[in-house]
Length: 271
Image (tube, rainbow, N blue to C red; front, side, top):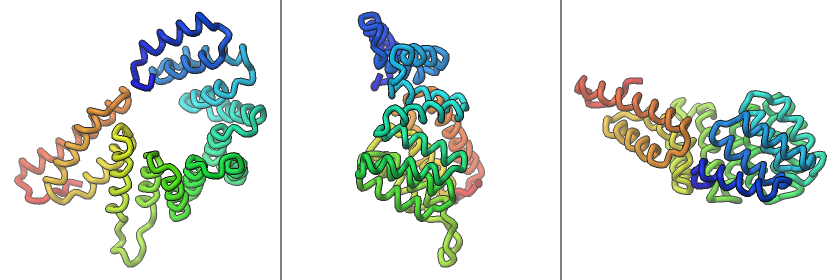
C-alpha cells in the first residue's frame, strides 16, 4: 500500500480478512486502499462492516469521516468525529480533524477547544501546531498562522506540510508599505524547496512552487526551469489526479515558453 501498488495490497488484505473475518482494523485498512483507488462505494461498505463488528473502532470512524469529506458531506464527517472523540477522548487526530471542520463552518471557538484538548494530550505535537496555524489562516491571520507553522517545522523538521503551509501564509500576507507592495516570493520559494528536500514526492509543493516560479519568472531560462521542475514532479507522481494536474500545468508552461521563443523575446513576461 505504501508503495502505491494498490491491486496487490487489496489481494493481501482480502486474504487477511478471510483468515480473520471479525478483525475490524483489517477491514479499515482494506477500505483505505479502496479510497486511494477512488473506489468510494466499496470503501464505504467496508467501513460499515467494520463498525458493525466493532461500533467503537476509532480508525473506522476517523477514516470514514475522511471519505465523507471527499464526498462533500461535512455533517456526516463531523458526526463520525464527534462520536470518535466521545468514545476516545485522547484521540488526537480525531480532535484535529474535528477542529478543521469546525473552522470551516466558522465555529472558531469550538475549533480552539478541540485543539486545546489535543495539545493537552500531546503538548509537543507538530500536527497540533499545524492545525492551529490553519485555524489562523482561515481567519485571515497570516502572521499568527506563520508563527504556528514555524513551530510545527521545529517539532517535526522532516514533515513537508508545515513548510508548504508557511509558504502559503507568506503569499497571502498583504505587502508592507516599505516593500514596494510586493509579496515575499523569495522566502515562499525557499520554504517550498525545503518541503521537497524532505519529501521529493510531495505534490502540493511542486504545484505551488511551479506556479510561483512561473508567475515571477523574468527570463526564459527561469521559465524553462519550471518545466524541468514539472518533469521531476511527474517522475515522483503517484496518483492519476496529480498526474492530470501536473500535465496540464506543464503544457501551459511549455506553451508560454514556446510563445516567448517564437516572438524572440529576450525576457519572459506573458502573464
